[in-house]
Amino acid sequence: GQRIIRVCLLKYDEWLVIDYSTSHLLHVSKDGKIKAKRLYEPTAHNAVLFGSNILAIRTTNCLNYYGV
Image 1 (cartoon, helix red, strand yellow):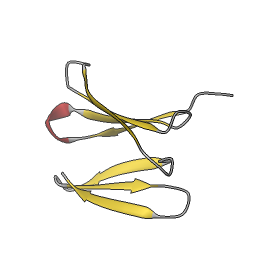
Image 2 (spheres, one colour):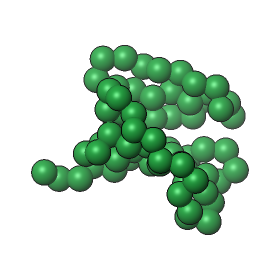
Image 3 (spheres, helix red, strand yellow):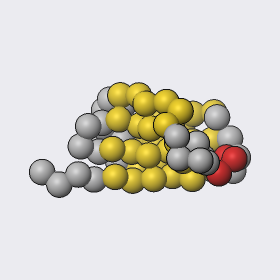
């Protein structure tokens, strides 16, 4: 299948990368290094940062909020 990647800008010029095909979230530093890689179940479809400290992640059936 086709690999689907989505990105979300975080604080401090860092990024959250969603790899839809493997269900992983990657936290990428501003210099492009992977700081963390986590399996996220159910698979994330999109993510957005609200303000400077609330990360919302949408899955097929729900919307999850996290303090960052």
